[in-house]
Length: 272
Image 1 (cartoon, helix red, strand yellow):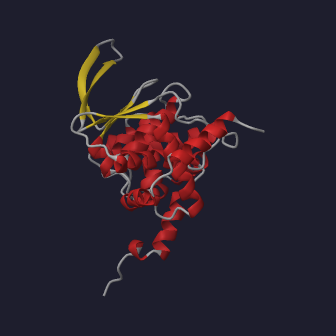
Image 2 (tube, rainbow, N blue to C red; image 1 turned 90 degrees about the vertical axis):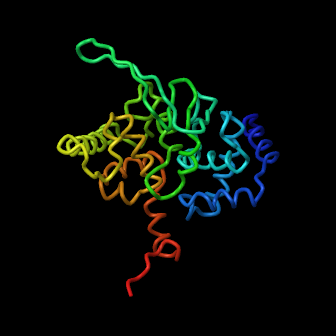
Image 3 (cartoon, rainbow, N blue to C red; image 1 turned 90 degrees about the horizontal axis):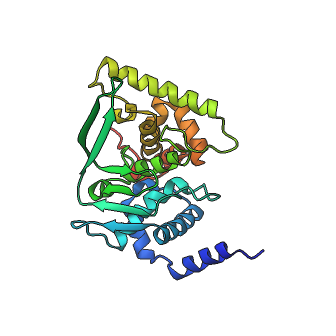
């Protein structure tokens, strides 16, 4: 059956096919894409083209956004959706605003006694409900490796979380997933991290302590680690890893382990 949406998608992909050297440069810059097979690579390229068609990237003065930079951002944004083709997961926003550096975000909070606190918080990224995503360009450029940091994935995880309403760490789960299993894995790990930081605020935790801010940040941080340091996340909180594996329908840990066993660049030098 003919589909206008499929026809438009095909026309867009044909019209905006990526130059091989441009894509090769992005792959070279993003080691977290290493180990994708040819079918996944082609699918990711297509997702990037469609993402750049649908989302407006607004670069503020001081950000030099060229084709490489646009594609660098798109590839990181679309990696989490690589195996989720059946829904418009990034619906509800149309713009990503790029700042030349970290920015001040006005914050407002009313405590239990009714006193309202107002302050400016320095941030590298922010996702607004029914609004744009804001990213500090240096943070985007620093993302893409296996170091447990990815600003793009972190903020877009908030957008996935917002699909169910509040930012509470519960994105829309697939039919084969159970809310009780998700909640148990996430809450147990969240409580464990919170206890360690309550006992020692300067503790060296297995994942970024910012994850203990609230359940929404826990989901965003663990999504970062799932794609950029899956070994660390799995070692610390294996049940969280398994739930994210079900949600994203990917297994970055196996991909990393295969690279470590077969790719000389990923093998540790043997002691003399």
